[in-house]
Image 1 (spheres, helix red, strand yellow):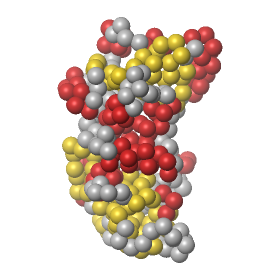
Image 2 (cartoon, rainbow, N blue to C red; image 1 turned 135 degrees about the horizontal axis):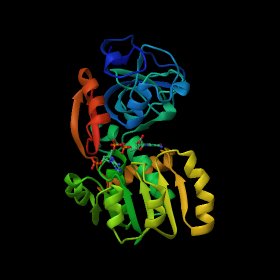
Image 3 (cartoon, rainbow, N blue to C red; image 1 turned 90 degrees about the vertical axis):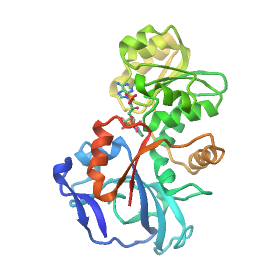
Length: 314
Ligand SMILES: NC(=O)c1ccc[n+]([C@@H]2O[C@H](COP(=O)([O-])OP(=O)(O)OC[C@H]3O[C@@H](n4cnc5c(N)ncnc54)[C@H](OP(=O)(O)O)[C@@H]3O)[C@@H](O)[C@H]2O)c1
Protein backbone atom coordinates (compact mmCIF):
# COMPACT_ATOMS: atom_id res chain seq x y z
CA UNK A 1 0.00 0.00 0.00
CA UNK A 2 0.98 3.65 -0.23
CA UNK A 3 1.55 5.49 3.04
CA UNK A 4 2.91 8.70 4.48
CA UNK A 5 5.40 7.49 7.08
CA UNK A 6 8.24 8.69 9.28
CA UNK A 7 11.62 7.05 9.77
CA UNK A 8 12.21 8.84 13.10
CA UNK A 9 10.59 11.51 15.25
CA UNK A 10 10.82 14.86 13.49
CA UNK A 11 9.46 17.04 10.69
CA UNK A 12 9.59 16.85 6.87
CA UNK A 13 13.25 15.68 6.93
CA UNK A 14 12.15 12.25 8.26
CA UNK A 15 8.83 12.05 6.37
CA UNK A 16 8.29 9.94 3.25
CA UNK A 17 5.52 9.01 0.86
CA UNK A 18 5.87 5.55 -0.64
CA UNK A 19 5.26 1.82 -0.37
CA UNK A 20 4.62 0.31 3.04
CA UNK A 21 3.70 -3.31 3.96
CA UNK A 22 -0.07 -3.96 3.99
CA UNK A 23 -1.48 -4.48 7.49
CA UNK A 24 -3.93 -7.30 8.24
CA UNK A 25 -6.90 -7.41 10.58
CA UNK A 26 -6.01 -9.11 13.89
CA UNK A 27 -8.44 -10.40 16.51
CA UNK A 28 -11.19 -7.86 17.09
CA UNK A 29 -9.76 -5.59 14.39
CA UNK A 30 -11.06 -4.17 11.14
CA UNK A 31 -9.04 -3.61 8.01
CA UNK A 32 -10.25 -0.23 6.76
CA UNK A 33 -9.68 1.30 3.33
CA UNK A 34 -8.95 4.83 4.47
CA UNK A 35 -10.68 7.58 2.47
CA UNK A 36 -9.96 10.69 4.51
CA UNK A 37 -7.87 11.77 7.51
CA UNK A 38 -8.12 15.09 9.34
CA UNK A 39 -5.11 16.61 11.08
CA UNK A 40 -5.10 17.78 14.69
CA UNK A 41 -2.27 19.40 16.66
CA UNK A 42 -1.76 16.06 18.45
CA UNK A 43 -0.65 14.59 15.11
CA UNK A 44 2.25 16.97 14.54
CA UNK A 45 3.12 16.95 18.24
CA UNK A 46 3.32 13.13 18.40
CA UNK A 47 5.12 13.00 15.03
CA UNK A 48 7.77 15.35 16.40
CA UNK A 49 8.25 13.18 19.50
CA UNK A 50 6.48 15.24 22.17
CA UNK A 51 4.87 12.11 23.62
CA UNK A 52 7.62 9.62 22.74
CA UNK A 53 7.43 7.80 26.07
CA UNK A 54 3.86 6.80 25.30
CA UNK A 55 4.05 6.63 21.56
CA UNK A 56 7.02 4.24 21.47
CA UNK A 57 10.20 3.95 19.40
CA UNK A 58 9.06 1.73 16.54
CA UNK A 59 10.00 3.06 13.06
CA UNK A 60 9.24 3.35 10.19
CA UNK A 61 5.90 4.51 11.46
CA UNK A 62 2.63 5.96 10.16
CA UNK A 63 0.92 8.79 12.06
CA UNK A 64 -2.58 10.33 11.78
CA UNK A 65 -5.47 9.77 14.19
CA UNK A 66 -8.89 10.92 12.87
CA UNK A 67 -9.99 8.80 9.92
CA UNK A 68 -12.97 7.74 7.80
CA UNK A 69 -13.20 4.89 5.32
CA UNK A 70 -14.76 1.60 4.28
CA UNK A 71 -14.35 -1.78 6.00
CA UNK A 72 -12.51 -4.16 3.68
CA UNK A 73 -12.16 -7.06 6.10
CA UNK A 74 -13.44 -7.92 9.59
CA UNK A 75 -11.04 -9.92 11.80
CA UNK A 76 -11.98 -12.76 14.13
CA UNK A 77 -14.31 -11.73 16.90
CA UNK A 78 -15.66 -8.67 15.08
CA UNK A 79 -19.41 -8.60 15.54
CA UNK A 80 -20.50 -5.04 14.85
CA UNK A 81 -19.11 -4.48 11.33
CA UNK A 82 -18.91 -6.18 7.96
CA UNK A 83 -17.05 -5.50 4.70
CA UNK A 84 -18.48 -2.50 2.87
CA UNK A 85 -19.55 -0.60 6.02
CA UNK A 86 -18.73 3.11 6.06
CA UNK A 87 -16.90 3.87 9.31
CA UNK A 88 -14.94 6.56 11.13
CA UNK A 89 -13.05 7.02 14.36
CA UNK A 90 -9.77 7.84 16.08
CA UNK A 91 -6.93 5.37 15.98
CA UNK A 92 -4.60 5.82 18.96
CA UNK A 93 -0.99 6.16 17.82
CA UNK A 94 0.47 4.98 21.13
CA UNK A 95 2.79 2.05 21.94
CA UNK A 96 4.06 2.01 18.33
CA UNK A 97 0.63 1.42 16.80
CA UNK A 98 0.27 2.68 13.22
CA UNK A 99 -1.81 5.70 12.34
CA UNK A 100 -4.26 6.33 9.52
CA UNK A 101 -2.20 8.14 6.85
CA UNK A 102 -2.16 5.13 4.53
CA UNK A 103 -4.41 3.32 2.09
CA UNK A 104 -5.13 0.62 4.69
CA UNK A 105 -5.52 0.73 8.46
CA UNK A 106 -5.92 -2.17 10.89
CA UNK A 107 -7.81 -0.82 13.87
CA UNK A 108 -9.54 -2.28 16.92
CA UNK A 109 -13.31 -2.25 16.45
CA UNK A 110 -13.70 -0.43 19.76
CA UNK A 111 -12.25 2.73 18.16
CA UNK A 112 -14.63 2.57 15.19
CA UNK A 113 -18.20 3.83 14.66
CA UNK A 114 -20.52 3.46 11.68
CA UNK A 115 -20.92 6.72 9.73
CA UNK A 116 -24.56 7.67 10.08
CA UNK A 117 -26.72 9.05 7.29
CA UNK A 118 -25.20 10.87 4.38
CA UNK A 119 -22.16 12.24 6.22
CA UNK A 120 -19.28 12.32 3.72
CA UNK A 121 -15.87 10.77 4.43
CA UNK A 122 -14.29 14.24 4.63
CA UNK A 123 -16.91 15.42 7.11
CA UNK A 124 -16.73 12.24 9.20
CA UNK A 125 -12.91 12.40 9.41
CA UNK A 126 -13.06 16.05 10.48
CA UNK A 127 -15.22 15.40 13.51
CA UNK A 128 -13.89 13.02 16.18
CA UNK A 129 -11.02 14.64 18.07
CA UNK A 130 -11.95 18.29 17.60
CA UNK A 131 -15.75 18.10 17.92
CA UNK A 132 -15.65 15.65 20.85
CA UNK A 133 -13.12 17.88 22.65
CA UNK A 134 -15.43 20.85 22.12
CA UNK A 135 -18.43 18.86 23.34
CA UNK A 136 -16.66 17.70 26.49
CA UNK A 137 -15.19 21.14 27.17
CA UNK A 138 -18.59 22.80 27.00
CA UNK A 139 -20.05 20.06 29.19
CA UNK A 140 -17.36 20.71 31.78
CA UNK A 141 -18.15 24.43 31.50
CA UNK A 142 -21.81 23.59 32.25
CA UNK A 143 -22.91 25.61 29.22
CA UNK A 144 -26.67 25.88 28.90
CA UNK A 145 -29.50 28.17 27.72
CA UNK A 146 -28.78 31.86 28.28
CA UNK A 147 -25.28 31.42 29.76
CA UNK A 148 -22.61 33.88 28.65
CA UNK A 149 -19.72 31.86 27.22
CA UNK A 150 -16.31 32.91 25.98
CA UNK A 151 -14.63 30.59 23.50
CA UNK A 152 -10.93 31.27 23.14
CA UNK A 153 -9.50 30.35 19.73
CA UNK A 154 -12.92 30.30 18.10
CA UNK A 155 -12.01 29.53 14.50
CA UNK A 156 -9.50 26.70 15.00
CA UNK A 157 -10.32 22.99 14.81
CA UNK A 158 -11.77 22.73 18.32
CA UNK A 159 -13.01 26.31 18.60
CA UNK A 160 -15.11 26.39 15.43
CA UNK A 161 -17.04 23.34 16.63
CA UNK A 162 -17.30 24.84 20.14
CA UNK A 163 -18.99 28.03 18.86
CA UNK A 164 -21.64 25.95 17.07
CA UNK A 165 -22.24 23.55 19.98
CA UNK A 166 -22.51 26.41 22.49
CA UNK A 167 -25.06 28.13 20.23
CA UNK A 168 -26.99 24.86 19.87
CA UNK A 169 -27.16 24.75 23.68
CA UNK A 170 -28.67 28.25 23.68
CA UNK A 171 -25.66 30.10 25.08
CA UNK A 172 -24.72 33.70 24.32
CA UNK A 173 -21.34 33.25 22.66
CA UNK A 174 -18.35 35.54 22.47
CA UNK A 175 -15.42 34.13 20.50
CA UNK A 176 -11.83 35.27 20.31
CA UNK A 177 -10.02 35.13 16.99
CA UNK A 178 -7.78 37.26 14.81
CA UNK A 179 -9.52 40.15 13.06
CA UNK A 180 -9.56 38.40 9.68
CA UNK A 181 -11.55 35.51 11.15
CA UNK A 182 -14.23 37.55 12.92
CA UNK A 183 -16.66 37.17 10.02
CA UNK A 184 -16.27 33.37 10.07
CA UNK A 185 -16.79 33.28 13.86
CA UNK A 186 -20.06 35.21 13.43
CA UNK A 187 -21.15 32.93 10.60
CA UNK A 188 -20.58 29.97 12.91
CA UNK A 189 -22.92 31.60 15.44
CA UNK A 190 -20.83 33.87 17.66
CA UNK A 191 -22.84 36.83 18.96
CA UNK A 192 -19.68 38.85 19.48
CA UNK A 193 -15.97 38.55 18.71
CA UNK A 194 -12.78 40.05 20.05
CA UNK A 195 -9.02 39.61 19.71
CA UNK A 196 -7.21 37.15 21.97
CA UNK A 197 -4.17 39.22 22.97
CA UNK A 198 -3.97 40.25 26.64
CA UNK A 199 -4.35 43.91 25.57
CA UNK A 200 -7.55 43.13 23.66
CA UNK A 201 -8.96 40.98 26.46
CA UNK A 202 -8.26 43.84 28.88
CA UNK A 203 -10.55 46.16 26.87
CA UNK A 204 -13.75 44.19 27.38
CA UNK A 205 -16.04 45.00 30.27
CA UNK A 206 -17.86 41.68 29.87
CA UNK A 207 -17.96 38.87 32.43
CA UNK A 208 -18.71 35.25 31.53
CA UNK A 209 -20.45 32.30 33.18
CA UNK A 210 -18.04 30.00 31.38
CA UNK A 211 -14.79 30.20 29.46
CA UNK A 212 -13.84 27.33 27.15
CA UNK A 213 -10.20 27.81 26.24
CA UNK A 214 -10.04 25.82 23.00
CA UNK A 215 -6.57 27.17 22.21
CA UNK A 216 -5.64 26.45 25.80
CA UNK A 217 -3.14 29.19 26.65
CA UNK A 218 -5.13 31.92 28.41
CA UNK A 219 -3.43 33.72 31.26
CA UNK A 220 -5.05 32.74 34.57
CA UNK A 221 -5.16 36.36 35.71
CA UNK A 222 -7.32 37.17 32.66
CA UNK A 223 -9.44 34.09 33.26
CA UNK A 224 -10.17 35.06 36.88
CA UNK A 225 -11.01 38.63 35.87
CA UNK A 226 -13.32 37.61 33.01
CA UNK A 227 -15.15 34.85 34.90
CA UNK A 228 -18.21 35.60 37.03
CA UNK A 229 -18.32 34.24 40.59
CA UNK A 230 -19.49 30.62 40.28
CA UNK A 231 -18.18 30.45 36.73
CA UNK A 232 -16.16 27.64 35.16
CA UNK A 233 -12.99 27.73 33.04
CA UNK A 234 -11.98 24.64 31.07
CA UNK A 235 -8.83 24.39 28.96
CA UNK A 236 -7.71 21.83 26.38
CA UNK A 237 -4.17 21.92 27.82
CA UNK A 238 -2.97 19.91 30.80
CA UNK A 239 -1.09 22.31 33.03
CA UNK A 240 0.28 21.38 36.49
CA UNK A 241 0.00 25.05 37.52
CA UNK A 242 -3.75 24.96 36.83
CA UNK A 243 -4.24 22.13 39.30
CA UNK A 244 -2.22 23.97 41.94
CA UNK A 245 -4.23 27.17 41.43
CA UNK A 246 -7.66 25.61 41.14
CA UNK A 247 -8.29 24.98 44.84
CA UNK A 248 -7.38 28.47 46.15
CA UNK A 249 -9.25 30.12 43.24
CA UNK A 250 -12.32 27.98 44.01
CA UNK A 251 -12.16 28.74 47.75
CA UNK A 252 -11.42 32.45 47.51
CA UNK A 253 -13.28 33.50 44.34
CA UNK A 254 -15.80 30.67 43.86
CA UNK A 255 -14.51 30.09 40.31
CA UNK A 256 -13.70 26.66 38.97
CA UNK A 257 -10.59 26.00 36.85
CA UNK A 258 -10.34 22.67 35.09
CA UNK A 259 -8.88 20.95 32.07
CA UNK A 260 -10.87 19.04 29.51
CA UNK A 261 -9.75 16.30 27.17
CA UNK A 262 -11.38 14.58 24.23
CA UNK A 263 -14.00 12.07 25.40
CA UNK A 264 -15.48 9.54 23.02
CA UNK A 265 -18.04 7.46 24.88
CA UNK A 266 -20.83 6.10 22.65
CA UNK A 267 -23.20 8.73 24.04
CA UNK A 268 -20.72 11.47 23.05
CA UNK A 269 -20.56 10.13 19.49
CA UNK A 270 -24.37 10.04 19.40
CA UNK A 271 -24.70 13.60 20.67
CA UNK A 272 -22.15 14.84 18.12
CA UNK A 273 -23.79 12.94 15.26
CA UNK A 274 -27.24 14.24 16.24
CA UNK A 275 -25.98 17.83 16.17
CA UNK A 276 -24.53 17.18 12.72
CA UNK A 277 -27.61 15.46 11.34
CA UNK A 278 -29.84 18.22 12.81
CA UNK A 279 -27.67 20.70 10.86
CA UNK A 280 -26.48 22.43 14.04
CA UNK A 281 -22.85 21.39 13.52
CA UNK A 282 -20.71 21.37 10.40
CA UNK A 283 -16.99 21.34 9.77
CA UNK A 284 -15.26 24.24 8.09
CA UNK A 285 -12.83 22.61 5.65
CA UNK A 286 -10.80 25.00 3.53
CA UNK A 287 -7.71 22.90 2.89
CA UNK A 288 -7.57 19.53 1.14
CA UNK A 289 -4.41 17.56 0.39
CA UNK A 290 -3.68 14.22 -1.24
CA UNK A 291 -1.68 11.58 0.66
CA UNK A 292 1.54 12.34 -1.25
CA UNK A 293 1.26 15.98 -0.13
CA UNK A 294 0.81 15.14 3.57
CA UNK A 295 4.06 16.93 4.51
CA UNK A 296 2.52 20.22 3.28
CA UNK A 297 -0.64 19.50 5.28
CA UNK A 298 1.45 19.01 8.45
CA UNK A 299 3.32 22.25 7.74
CA UNK A 300 0.04 24.15 7.34
CA UNK A 301 -1.44 22.59 10.50
CA UNK A 302 1.55 23.54 12.60
CA UNK A 303 2.55 26.92 11.20
CA UNK A 304 -0.17 28.15 8.83
CA UNK A 305 -3.00 29.09 11.23
CA UNK A 306 -5.61 27.16 9.24
CA UNK A 307 -9.29 27.82 9.86
CA UNK A 308 -11.38 24.82 10.88
CA UNK A 309 -10.06 21.46 9.74
CA UNK A 310 -7.44 20.20 7.25
CA UNK A 311 -8.32 17.07 5.29
CA UNK A 312 -5.94 14.61 3.64
CA UNK A 313 -7.74 12.50 1.03
CA UNK A 314 -6.39 9.02 0.44
N1 LIG B 1 -6.65 17.65 25.57
C1 LIG B 1 -7.24 17.15 24.48
O1 LIG B 1 -7.85 16.08 24.50
C2 LIG B 1 -7.17 17.96 23.20
C3 LIG B 1 -7.94 17.59 22.11
C4 LIG B 1 -7.91 18.38 20.96
C5 LIG B 1 -7.06 19.50 20.94
N2 LIG B 1 -6.28 19.78 22.01
C6 LIG B 1 -5.37 20.95 21.98
O2 LIG B 1 -6.16 22.10 21.77
C7 LIG B 1 -5.39 23.08 21.10
C8 LIG B 1 -6.23 23.63 19.94
O3 LIG B 1 -6.50 22.59 19.00
P1 LIG B 1 -7.11 22.96 17.59
O4 LIG B 1 -7.35 21.71 16.85
O5 LIG B 1 -8.24 23.93 17.77
O6 LIG B 1 -5.86 23.75 16.98
P2 LIG B 1 -5.82 24.68 15.67
O7 LIG B 1 -6.84 24.27 14.70
O8 LIG B 1 -4.40 24.72 15.26
O9 LIG B 1 -6.32 26.09 16.24
C9 LIG B 1 -5.58 27.20 16.26
C10 LIG B 1 -6.54 28.38 16.49
O10 LIG B 1 -6.07 29.03 17.61
C11 LIG B 1 -6.10 30.43 17.38
N3 LIG B 1 -4.99 31.02 18.10
C12 LIG B 1 -3.70 31.16 17.71
N4 LIG B 1 -3.00 31.77 18.67
C13 LIG B 1 -3.87 32.02 19.69
C14 LIG B 1 -3.75 32.62 20.96
N5 LIG B 1 -2.59 33.09 21.41
N6 LIG B 1 -4.85 32.69 21.75
C15 LIG B 1 -6.03 32.21 21.32
N7 LIG B 1 -6.23 31.63 20.12
C16 LIG B 1 -5.14 31.53 19.31
C17 LIG B 1 -6.01 30.63 15.88
O11 LIG B 1 -6.79 31.76 15.59
P3 LIG B 1 -6.47 32.82 14.42
O12 LIG B 1 -6.17 32.01 13.18
O13 LIG B 1 -7.74 33.61 14.31
O14 LIG B 1 -5.28 33.63 14.85
C18 LIG B 1 -6.61 29.34 15.33
O15 LIG B 1 -7.97 29.56 15.01
C19 LIG B 1 -4.10 22.38 20.66
O16 LIG B 1 -3.06 22.73 21.53
C20 LIG B 1 -4.42 20.92 20.81
O17 LIG B 1 -3.28 20.13 21.06
C21 LIG B 1 -6.33 19.06 23.14
